[in-house]
Each structure stands twice: as structure tokens, then as C-alpha cells.
Length: 246
Ligand SMILES: [Fe+2]
Image (cartoon, rainbow, N blue to C red; front, side):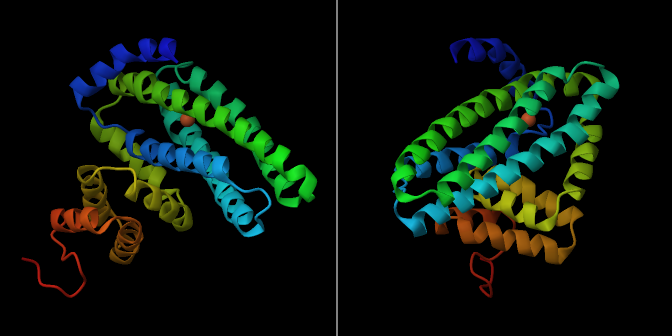
């Protein structure tokens, strides 16, 4: 862990200094929050409680599907962009993605095994799934920092912010609405209000009004009243529909 931190720290300092467009930042915050929360819930899961087991495993499966899709978006758009201007530049994180795909398949198998296991086998299968998912989360936390530092450093040298924003817009246009709602749900509880404001200002300019309003509704349902009020105020919206803005 220390080695990984020391490897990426100098680049992280450049990142903070440069204030360039960060294509990874918001989605990675959302995924970190979702992964950390899911790991905690697997840790406290009573494997004999069928209702709890189903809810937690459903959420785990949804996260694994999202991770699979996220990884594909990065391959299709970001890695392709890096490789176009520096062949081999995305090799390290592309290799990580190949391993992550195998891990996701194994975790899906373990989730299914726990879901269908007879009572005597449930505790051991729950512990196995918890342990293996913890390793997956740990590897992804390191992997995402490498992307945010080393891959971003390559993107920033070879692309302007206008080009990176256009690339991000293309990536977003490929994301189905159901997946977008899932991402916004996790961003609502992991980004700060300033970051959420930037996301919704951008969405308001580029997405159809019904899509913007639907995503804003998703965010509101998952935010605390205080955070929602701050976001609504920053967007010039009343915190409660129908109230006149003060
Ligand atoms: Fe990645």
C-alpha cells in the first residue's frame, strides 16, 4: 500500500496543481463509496436471514454488473484515446481490467453459491465471499488511483481539456439510462456539493430536460436534506418543489 502511494504521489501533486479536466474523478468516488458500503454490509450479513441475504446479494450483483460496464467504458473510450496517441500507454490498466473481469465472474459465482446454499454451508460461503470481495475492493482502490494519476498524466499531455470533455460526452452518451441512474444514486452520496453542482450544470446544458429532472430526482432521494438544500440553492432551484426561491 505504501509503495503504491509513494509511486503515485508525485503525479497526484501534479494533478492538484494542474487542475485539468479529471475524467475519472467523480465516477471513481461513486464506485469507492459503493464498494466500501457493500463490503461493510457483507461483513455484517447474517447468512441465515433470507431477506437480508437476498437484499445484500442483489446489491452486490448490481455493483458487479456496474463494475463490468464501467471497465468496458474505460476500455472503449479512455484506453482507446491513450493508445491512439501513445501506443502501449494503457497497457498496465488494460491488464488490470482483464484480471478484474475474471474476479467479477468468480464473485458472481460465489454470490450465486451463497444465495442457493443449504443452511449448513452458508456461514463458510459468506465468509469466503466477504474475503474475496475485500481483495477485489482493495485492488480496485489501488487501480483507480493509478488511473487518476498515471493515465490522467498521459491524457493531459496528449489531449486538451476540450478534447477530454468531448470524449467524456461521447462516453456518457453510450451509458443506458438505468445505469446512469445507478451512477447518479452513488454520486449523490459520494461527491461534495460543488462537484454535484458541476455535474448537474453540465447535464442541464447537454441532456434533454426530462432526463436532467429524472437524474436530479434520483439525487434528491438519496441526499440528506441539508446537502440537497445546498445543491438546489447552487443550481438556482427551490429546495422543495413549488417553493419560491429566496
Ligand atoms: Fe479501470
